[in-house]
Structures are given as C-alpha cells and as structure tokens.
Image 1 (cartoon, rainbow over the protein chains, first blue to last red):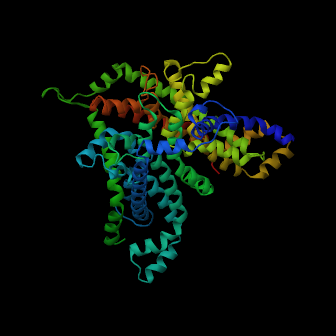
Image 2 (image 1 turned 45 degrees about the vertical axis):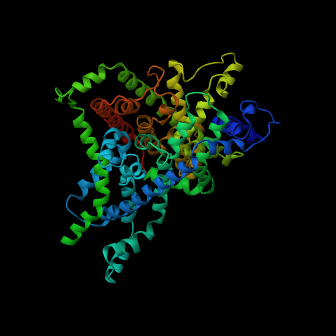
Image 3 (image 1 turned 60 degrees about the vertical axis):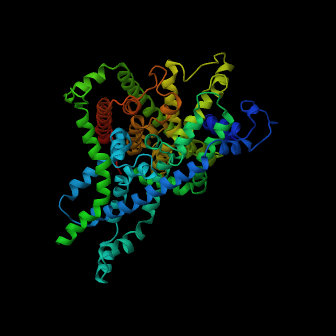
Amino acid sequence: MRRAVSASPMWLFGLVWALPLLYAVWSAVHPAAYSTVFSLLAPLTWRNFADAWNAAPFARYFLNTVMLVSFTVFFQCVFATLAGFAFARLKFPGRDLLFAALLLQLMISPSILLVWNYQEISWLGLANTIPAMGIPYLGSALGIFLLRQNFRTIPSELDDAARLEGCSLLGRLWKVYVPLSRGTYVAFALTSVAYHWNDFLWPLVVSDSVTTRPLTVGLEIFATPDQGVQWSLVTAATLLSSAPLLIAFLIFQRQFVQSFLRVGIR
Amino acid sequence: MDGETHLGGWLLVLPAALFIFAFTNVPLLATLASSLYAAPIAGHGGGFVGLANFRALFADPSFRTSLVNNLVYAAVTVPASVVLALAMALGVNRAIPGRATLRLFFFLPTMLPMIAVGAIWLFFFTPQYGLLDRVTGLIGRGDINWLGNPATALPAMMMVAVWKQAGFFMIFYLAALQNIPPVLHEAASLEGASRRYFFRRVTLPLLGPTTLFVMVTATINAFCVVDHVVEMTEGGPDNASSLLLYYVYTAGFRDWQLNGAAAATIVLVVILSGLAALLFAVFGRRVHYR
C-alpha cells in the first residue's frame, strides 16, 4: 500500500505524458461523434481505419517506405562493412585523415545540406525516385564507426588462422568478421530502420508523386488539409502509419532498447 | 604492409567514402562557397560578393526571428529534456507497481515518426476541440488558439519536441543508473549520508557521460529537426515558430534564394558545431568516466 502511494506521483506523470497518444487512440477507435466525448458507452469501431486506408493511397506509401528503408539499410551495411574492416585492420596511406573526414557526418547530417543535395540529385537525374531518398545516406559514418570498433575487438589469431588456410581478404571478412559482429549489425540496422522509416524533410523535398512518396510525407499531406479536418480519420491514419514500427518495437522491445543504447553510448 | 593491402584498403573504403563525400563533405564546402557568391540578376551582376549574403541575411527580419527562435528553442528543449528524462528514469528505476507500463508510456512517443507526433498534437491543440483546450476550459481559460497565437506557437513546438525525445533519453539514464554499483549505496548508508547528498555527490557525477551525450543529441535535434514546424505551423504565425532549418528550407525551395539559403546553412552549421564544442569543453572536463 505504501509503495502504491509513493508511486502515485509517477503514475500521474506517466498518464499525463501518455494523454496525447491515448486521446488519439480514443478518437481513432470511436465514431466521429464520440471523438471528444468520453463516455463508457461509446461504441467501438474499426471504420475509421478502413476509411482512412481508402481515403489516400496508404498501401502504396507503405510499399514506398519499405523499399526506401530496405534499399538504404542494405547498402549502408554493405558499404560500412567494407570500410569498417579497412579502417580496423588494414594500413594504407591517409587512413586516419580519411577516417576523421568521414566522421564529420556524425555532426553534420546530409539532411541539413538539403538545398545543395537536392541540386546534386537533380543533376544526376534522380529527383522523384525512391533511390534518391536513400542515396545521400548510403555512406554511413555511424555504421563505419560502430563496425570498426567491433572488428578491432576480434582476435587477430582467428584472422591469421583463416589466412593460413588460404582464405582471401574478402573471404576472411565474410567468414570471420561478419558472423562475429551480429550484435553490432542488429543494433545499427534497428537504429537506421527507425531513423529512415520516420524521416520526413528530405523525402518531402525529393519525392513528388504517389509512386515515390513515403508514409511520412503521405501522412503529412493527409493530416494537414486546408479545411475540413476529420480528426477521427487523421488519428486513425496516424496510428496506422506508425503501427509497423510500434508493433515491431513492442515485440522486440529489449533488442530495440539495447540497440539504441549500444549505438548511443558507442 | 605490401602494395596489395594499400590498394585493398582504398578500394574497400571507396564506396562509403564516395557517398559520404558526395553528400556531406562536398555539399558543406559547396554551401560555404555558394554563401560567398551571388546569382546574376538578368544576366549581369553576381559573382563573388564576400560577406554580402550574410549582411543581407542579418538584415532580414524573418531570418533574425528564426535565429532567435532557434536559440530560445534550444535553450528550453535541451535542459527540459534532460530534466524530464532523468526524472522518468529515477521514477521507473524503483520497484513500483506497473513499472513496465510506465516505461512504455514514456518511451512510445520516441518510436513515432515526428510527423505522426505532429498530427497527434495538432489534434491535441485544436481550439475548442482538442483536449488541451478543454482542460484549460475547466479553469476558465479555454479557447486558446495555441498554434495561431504568436505568443504560444513556439512554446507549442517546444512541447512537441520534448514530448517526442525525453523518453528516448530516459533509456540512457536508466541504463546508467543500473550501472551504479550497489556497493556505493551500502557504503553511503553506513556513512550515514542522506539520500539527497548521495544523489548530488555520487549519482549525478556518475551520470555525467550520459548527460553529455543527451545534451549533444538534444542540441543536434534542436537545430536539425523541423518536421513538426513544417506540418503544424509552417513557421507561423508571422515567423513566430520558424527555426533556422525551416528558414533554409523555405529560402531554398519556396523563394529559390539559393545563396541566401547557403549563408543560412553556414550560420546553422557554425552555431551547431560551436555549441557542441562548448558542451564538450564545459562538461567533458567535469565528466567522470569509469
């Protein structure tokens, strides 16, 4: 009992914190007439979700986001593996200087250089394509840094043993280093998926049609019409477009949190 | 090392380095160069103009407003996120009933896209309809147009930003708190140290590295995330909620003032790196690493 009493300020804090989200959930699962009427007798409905899904091409937006995220994270991992290995285990002239130059990206993200990057993407003739939304991020300083740190902890005896068996450089990378870094890959990939699934400003700038627009941009267009906002549809669409990541998080909570910690503390 | 590994090293870093240089380092230098040039108007003028773009920028009231807004926005959201995240972590670090649910409540906003957060708060802020207005209505101060009033638009953006990120920082504090050896608690209670004394002299210093990380991340967010501004207020009313990156975005993509946008980007980069350096200088030295 005393524990419950001492916990009550914290619970009040938590409930206030959750209020905007709970309010959105309330309005999404009730008919529009009950959006702001809190009654235990309010009938539950899934209509808002169905209506929102049909009111805008959300299925296409989902597909675009999935393509964007998988394209981006896949190439990030491949390129970061190669570079991380070179920085961890090979000696070549200019290595440390190059490494420092690449780490600039940890501070200055391509997204704040969007005006210039848009011009580059236009010169390349890639504006309004799905790759254009991922290309500026394919080289990831964070990925390189994390993998380099991890590769350096792998005992070089393992590397030497594979070398004696006639394993090539890339063969050793693939058979020794990559399997021993699974945790780092999971941590980086989850962080990157969460980032690119939620990214908005850069996709807003480069995408200009239903066939390229990711969920975030589609949702923004849907949520801010000039007039006549139907809140129950907007909240349903909001929850719908956040659902995959939220559900993934609820299932793999521990992995997500540990990944964020691992990437954050580095 | 033989020639093969020299070449091998360069070949392995090439793809990643190419993309990072092409979309971070080169654009940064190009933006710097572009900020010192002017586009020719009707075929003449233009060329190198030195700091003229920067003078024009600081003469532009909407830029000055965005700059001041952004500094205020950072000065509020960074400490507010730190304090709330620490309070959350201290709260759910104890064995209290429903701890996992509470932690989830705090953390969930973090997993939502900023655009979804913006939509939720748009609803929350709606005059007469939104929950916030109904609550303030109970104490006789309803019908506030939170996003349409110059006095409340920027604070509204701050609330949204803090709500979105504090739960994320909480997990770092939580991890750090759980890393504090229980021996220290025992030693302190043997010495008869009060809980407040223990918190100030032991807990807080041990949380130093986490606080530094949180402050740097929150500072980067304060200058690099404007999704909610685009969605909720478009910088209005009358630039009251405009931030630097939002100014860059409108200068670049609405007004096509590319050199002005470049100069504003440089101001943004200078402030951001200056603040990060300051944080490391002030807190980095006092931070207690184990």
